[in-house]
Length: 291
Length: 291
Image (cartoon, rainbow over all chains, first blue to last red; front, top):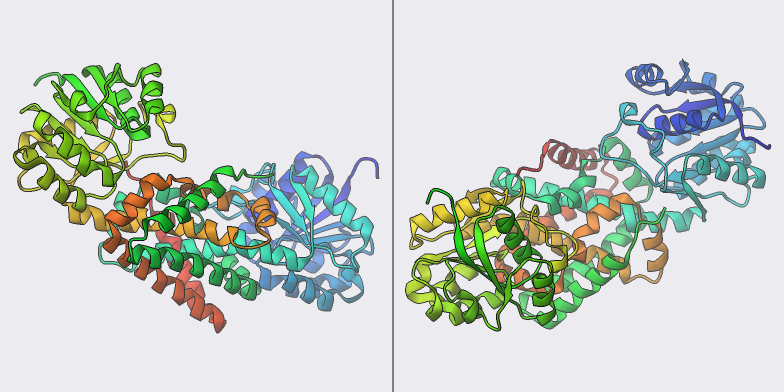
């Protein structure tokens, strides 16, 4: 199509990511109507009153009826149920995407749940977010200059991969395509493990009797380091469990790097500690956030 | 004194922290002249050309001659040497401070190095900084709304504690007073351990063959989490070694918290993982950066 225009977006899950996606598409004037449904009635109502969706429907089946674009923006372990529910009601030409943070499990489950409609499914992961969750924090610019990863399989319809790429580019995102396995390994390394570490670091502080004094003295370094520890348990339980093997393997690599410091500290090995710090400092100084 | 005014600040160490201190005092018009010296000639020259100091001197002894305010802004393990060098040349009424990030060892060494002049020494730690180091990044506002901790001992002259408090308040800092041991334990928890973790996390990424792809995909969560890993090896080697026992003890608490996640992940214990994430998320969400 010359100008991309969808008649109906079915938004299943009206949270931060789903809401921001709908707003971005509305801003780009490429969707006529948004039907929304969510596990929480309050989220639906907030989404409607904020203009994120145009209509609340009572089920995902109702949402996808007549929709040419379907976005499933629910926690990872709920995606399978949603896909099974909507499979018999999907239009032949609909592009179906999720936004889950782990992809191998989603792709496997989607194949089972969607059956013949599996080629219409383009697993997607926009690498964007913020501390606050919920549709009230949704914004059309959330994906701007952030990466979105698409992880199609060999069965995915090529023209839908192209269409999915165009849709995410329209939100301002830079789109990459890779296999679900590559995605999951990389995400375990650069996102899932850092979240696990940040949660554990905050819990370690909280486990000590002087926690109030400690937290009161914490400065901007701690603020940034621990920001991701404020993330939502609903979302992160699913991510951790659905990408468990990659996460545990990244955790081993981290524990090795941590032991390297611990052993060298214990024997005051200044030269080696300097090398370890210098390596991290050089790597981090030369890294730039890539859109 | 009614209006606080120093005739001469001896700035020993012209880096980010020392330079920002001099600029803040100049901005407040409470210092007439700043004599600077630094291990690096280039830093001295940059400091002079940026107006951070008014004069370069060749030694810390020369810097403190006639100075009524002395700031030692060098890495922790260099403080002792500087104190021993300047001790015979200090004015009776001079207020002497350091800015080291660990305080028990500094206080001990200072007592030996300064002898009779030890009561003039008020150990200080401004909890401020940024990714970039060096005097070129110094700014008068660096300490604004950040905490500065003073850790005087029972021998410190009370009027100098009061004076030190006023000086740091003049830079915009919120001043707290505690013992060196309390300071070191808290800082190990909220700053030294997070730095160690961030260094180790970046090194773990760097140890893997896919490091380029991983780093290329990293998003804003990783950016903030790893910001402190760009810190300088010169500064952090000294901090780690000078506060080794507290740091290792905080590391044990963190490893316990990390194992809690690992064990529960291995057996898919959703309820416990949710609890662990929820605790961290609640603690971090309710925490606010305190000036």
